[in-house]
Every structure is written in structure tokens, then in C-alpha cells.
Length: 384
Image (tube, rainbow, N blue to C red; front, side, top):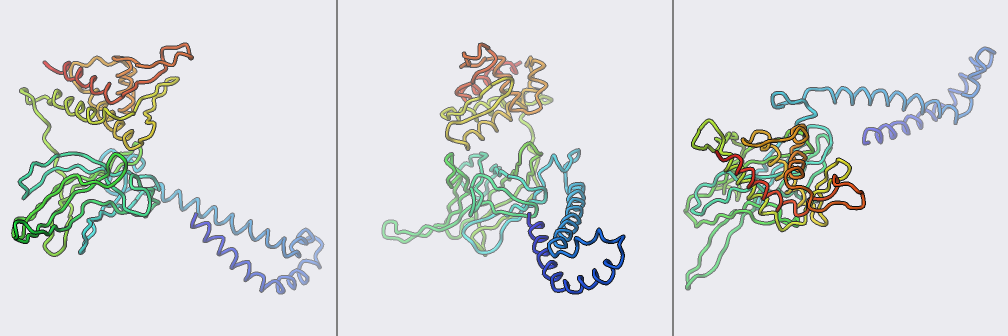
């Protein structure tokens, strides 16, 4: 759009310049065209409006061809740093840049290197050092900085927005007549209603070892391969907060007594806990004329969290031992749809649409609760 606005401005400028030369154009017409009958068909050029129309067609036609060639070239250019086996259309292409300098809020810039699209960001806490309290290793949705919506960011090619990672401050007071001062940092994310909330906080006294967090940031867009980077966030000595990139370690999978197998009981237990945390939501699954949709009457953020849990559970279905999956379940390309088909076949729809006269359409109400129950059954089948 910006390129076309620029072309329109250039067209206006060239048209004004052409108007200055209009007298010369009339002289050329009178001198060269009129004496030659074979060129009478050019008579319409004697009108200023006709010349303007011809110039507009030529100008914008040439610009359209140039813009189309430029867009085609950009779309076929190879993307950098793509995972092996992925194409540019299948992988999120962004650059993450931690902000530096004295500030009480740590920001992480997300720059879009691909086509314009909407992004979502999630953070996973991996480790914490120099803090006596136990870390709750959780995954939560990150907050996009102002001025637009906090839950998602729409970025054009080359555009960027900041994510809010953490805040820092200090506490002063008097305890039994003695003044004290403590400093703190807090990892922040979004609550279920889309507001900023503290996920983890660390406090320390002057002279104590400064706390550090290792965290993983995941940027997603649609069904593309996510972009994942890991960082260390710590209380700074020259600034309130410091953040820098680190290598993402591949965590060793949980092991059962047979070390050649994954701990499927533990993994299904993890999925069950995720669904159990969402049981109070109003999220439900709708099945109509062979198509699935996950919906919520008033909480889109909760809907996204339930869908993400279904995505993980559906991915585990394919390799979990003891499972007997139908061809319909196995053939699904999207993991969350595979999970919903599995629920329908094993537990059924708990509310059918009676006016259609068919048992194949209806709803899975209390989707998180039904999914938690199914995870328990999957864990039982994996037990051997």
C-alpha cells in the first residue's frame, strides 16, 4: 500500500511537470501530426484530458509490472536460518533483540523478517539461580507492549514490537525501628483476562547474590513452525535488568524403568494437569458437518490455552503405547483436531444437535474436563 501511495505522489508530480511542457506538446502536434493524414488517429492527443489518461495508463501499468516482479522476487528469496526440512512458508521468521540500558522494565524486540502476519508469544521458565524459593516451571502468554492489543501483534515485513519480559523495583520500610531496603525483579505475563500479572518474583538484600532466570521464548503464527530462543534474565549491577541470549538445551526426556522408552504415564499426567487447570473455563468443542471448532462464549484467551493443550495431547496420541487409533484419528494433519476426533470416538458428544436428525453433529461441553478424563485413560493404557 505504501508503494502505491508513493507511486500516486510521483504520478501527480510528473503530471504537473508535463503541464508545464503542454505548450511544447501542442507545437509538436501541429508541426508533425497534422500534415500527415495517416497520423490523424493521434488527434485525440490534442486534448489535455486525453493525454492525461494515456499517461496514467502507461505510468500505472509500468508500475504494476515492476511491483509484481518485485513481490515475486521477494517471495521466492530464501529465508535465513530455517530449520532443516522447513520451507519459508512453514517457519516463523523473526529476530529477537533484548533491550539494553537503564530501565525498570525489560523489553524484548520482535522484528518480523517474513510476510506480514499476526504473532503470539509464550514464555517458559526453565531455571532460577540465587533464590532460595522453589521455581514453578510454567508456560504462560507474554504481553505485547503498547500501543495496540496485548495478546497478539500484527506486523508487516520489517515491522517490530516489544514484548514485556520483567519489571524491577525496590521496597523500603522500617522494621522494629530499623530501616530496611530490598530490591526485587518479577517475571511478568498475561492473566486469563489479558492483564499484566507477576509470574515469579525474587527479592534480595544489598550484598546478596543477584537472582537469575533462564527462560525460553516461543513465537508462533498460525500453523507455521515456531521460532524458539532462550535467554538469561538477571538483576544487573549497572542497570536494573540485563538480558542476553543463550543456547537452548534439549531437555532429556523423562525415563521409565526401561530407559529406551519415554515416561508416557508422566507425560499424560502432565497433559491432565494442564487440562485440570482449565476445567472452570466455558470452552467447548463444536462438531458440525464433519468440521471441528473450539469456541468460548466470552474468553478468547482461555480458548487459546485449551486449544494449545489439545494440540499437545493430540501430538502424544500418535506414539503413545497401548493406543488403538482409527484411520480417521491417524489421518488428521492438525494435532488438536486429532485429539477432538479421539474424544468423539472414545467418549462421544455429550450434547447432540437433535434437529439435524443425526448423531454425527453436536458438542463436547466442558472440553477441558472431558480431556483431563481422557488423559487418565491414556495413561492407564500406557502402563505396562
